[in-house]
Image (cartoon, rainbow, N blue to C red; front, side, top):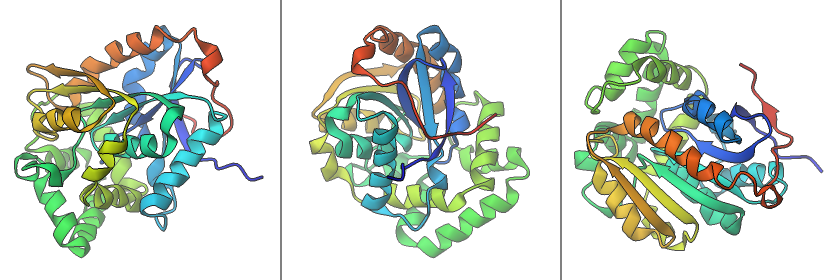
Length: 284
């Protein structure tokens, strides 16, 4: 039997409790580095798949199932915890829908809600990109190619993509992530955006996984109204943390140690978990 293996980046402990992280869109597996120190402290192994590298011919359910199968295979069918950041939260929710009880906890950080569920698009910093992807797919793909061409100047990419997003923190990390995103696997990035802007609100009613929401009150890339909506729409939501004065990436920085403390409290329950196996571990 051929194993469904995908490249991933690993952070935190070498042999800890596995936690699957879904980076943002735009984003790259290197984004997960924010959990590295805390993962080591709490015996957690963070895995972030390079999902943009998945064959771009796989769309919709076939794409989600391919990723879910890889996670299930590598975890030997045992439960894992998941964290979804920004649009990565949308992908994580699709995993929960497909994997059900094989996901123990879902943490949504600065997560993006379905655009059709409210007046979100008009108050989101990325509204021009989202509208282009919704209404003019060909023009959107031209934009993606342009972003790839100018990615050699990461500060320019940063200004273009996040000029209206609140918070100026993590510029070095963000620009590196954007450069990686727009210089490798741009069709995969475009696939995530196209999927996200389509209606998916109805899928939330089937999410029974224990869900924790973390969001910055000043986030205008994923406005705080999105967090409030997700909390009300996900049946499994058990907690919501809204941080005053924090925005998109600063919320991720604030949430990382707290999430690791929570997950670390159960790290000794190894009988419930599988150590990570197989896969293709991308080297530094």
